[in-house]
Length: 199
Image 1: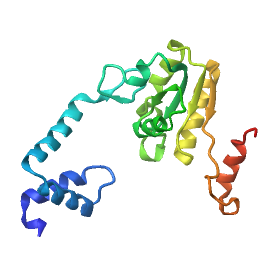
Image 2: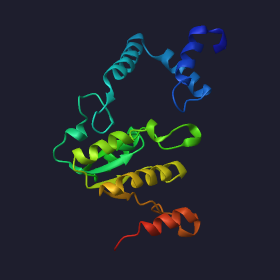
Image 3: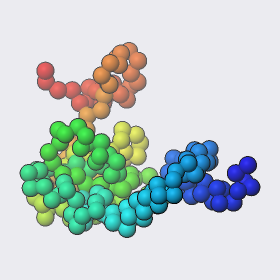
Image 4: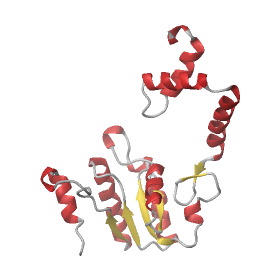
């Protein structure tokens, strides 16, 4: 049916360009738009245009912001000598929800993946190195995923920073709360052992 309605097909195709949205989901979104009032559709379109025009990278941490400098970098209460390196802006949002981390961030905008053409020059690593001296960074926490690309990225950053006298740490990964140890795989158990702490 949608194939015969050109404007609906076009709208669906636009939604399908979004990451993680398949053809069926895109079509559902297109139909949802048709259920909105004209005023709601205009607000929706304006919100997209407004976000695209106003949001840019923070010149310090490379996180997304609609201000000159993001709120975290602009906060003098935070510890600017402690930098948490993450792969994307979504991770910053997740970390901020915990409300325990008092340092600042650096967003790489990806992880190393030579097979997919993502080499160090494609990431915001050069910008991280520039911050080390300027901000008197004493510790960098690498908070990339515990997969091959995340581990490779963490090791690469550690190799670059250690000669500069910066302490490089890694988030402890391990057994989730409520999980039986017998069902954990070897990598999870290894990371849990590495991340053990005093009780």
